[in-house]
Length: 204
Image 1 (tube, helix red, strand yellow):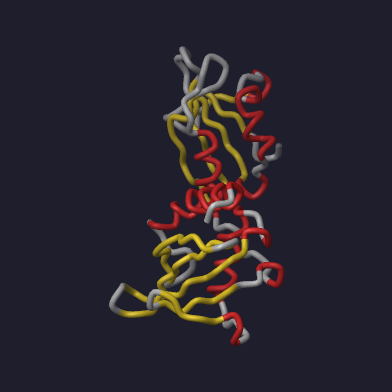
Image 2: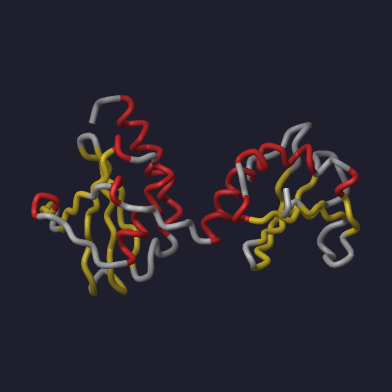
């Protein structure tokens, strides 16, 4: 693999899939590796309780067929039910069954709530600067709601910010620092002893 675009895609997919090392990507299916291939990425998935029971499959996805962000959803769809493959799409390598996927024929399954929360928290977890607040905590509240605990650099008070994960947009993440400063959005944090003020952005 020498093409710079291939290297960038491979690195992006590898970073994206690191989160799935600690939890199943689908029921009974665990990530075992992300391997480079010419013009494609190969993702090793072990189906079974542990390494001694079950089998590992290698799913190949061409770089030019799908953006990296859709790959977890494509894998969840593929792993959730019975799939039919032509003999041309199946092979063997390194003792694993290789399956070449055609992503254009697969509707990505939606990201589970925990995955949505992780994406938001990663986007907000860099230390703040003079303008932006620090993310200092969070609480999953059910019904796709997430409370973020933020504090402005140099500030004394902690602000609890409620967001709705299903509606979470990049624009809201980018706007969060200015939205939490708008005093008309502030409410007393009377139902939560962990914050001084609450800001409800669930309807943003």
